[in-house]
Amino acid sequence: MNNIHTDTKVIIVGAGPAGAGVSFYLTKFGIPHIVIDKESFPRDKVCGDACSGKTALVINRANPEWMTEILAQATDFLPSWGITFVAPNGKPLDIPFSPYRKTDSKAPGFTVPRLFLDNFLFGKMASPHCTIYQKAKIDNILHSENKVTVTMNCNGDTHTITAPVIIGADGDKSIVRKQFLSDSTTPKTYAVGLRAYYEGVTNMHHDNFIELHFLPEMLPGYLWIFPLPHGQANVGVGILSEVIRNKKINLREQMLAAIKNNPQIAPRFANAKLVDKIQGWGLPLAMERQPMSGNNFILVGDAAALVDPFSGEGIGNALYSGMLAAMAIKEALPNNDFSAAFLKTNYDDVLYKRLGDELKISATLQRLCKYPWLFNFVVNKASKSESLRNTISCMFADVDLRDQLRKPSFYLKILFNK
Image (tube, one colour):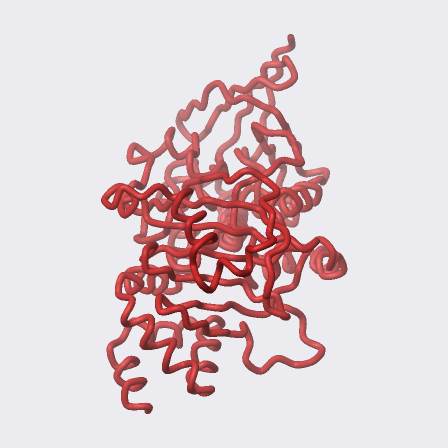
């Protein structure tokens, strides 16, 4: 056993999309960093497997060749052109991500199993500026004045790594968050998700729309069906933890009951086969603003509770927060200023300036899902009005338009067909 001491500029704990996002841009800026992950890649991560345009944006900015590579692998990355909302009354509403799609345009989003996506991103982290440790166990994180020291064990060797800043990219059970924030959990914002892989699900949309089914028994949660490559589908449910506790819901039983008994869903699963066990995970929803940095630390992705409260998307926000964290580090390094005040201004405030309105709107929409009559009303009207469908479609690309969903005047206009 060897005792190895290393100094670096940045320590990143976690090599998923959030950690990869930080690493990509640190490499782009020529900043040395060390990435520590407790697993060995390729490894699975329980998730819905849907990637929005935000995912594509961050990857493309890091290296346009990577998005070209993704788009060329249609057998592994399935392009998706929209979303289908199914109201509590069973009426579906197809909403393309872009209502004015051109024949030569590229799909705004895609679906891909996390086993494949994370391994793809992990492979792109390799660079002269990045040192990666897999199957590493962190024994201790020590925060002293202006630096962080991590002690870990990897391949029988003990490593002591020191840096002026540490990045918590280690998910909803983040050890970095627990170390640096006394309020390390966010129980009021947590939801629980279950994921299953099926093959043989029928009647999928020809443009690979992802589906959200707002079943009455699951509100304000929903059941999803996301098409995947190789004829598979990611099927799951997500519900607020407090709703599960209050109603004493067995989430697995409820999901299987919907698949078996729902008149619209069951026929599509008549010959479908479950190809993997049903797995669950926590969803740290961004229901309210929380601190995401402090003296010598930054939290990104699920560790920062950045899962979209309405759609449940976490991958795009994880990559995006990683990109912004790297930009903040670039600004901090010249004066070695990793104080709480500097990081709040250059990371927290910047992130909320760019994503805050979107997350607030999603939190409001999540709360509105408690009212099935309102959901049914909007879907019924939109199914009869092309202009309303196009308006809702544009809301996915324009946060200012999406904000209309929070205003009573929007529903009054629908009511009076204005």
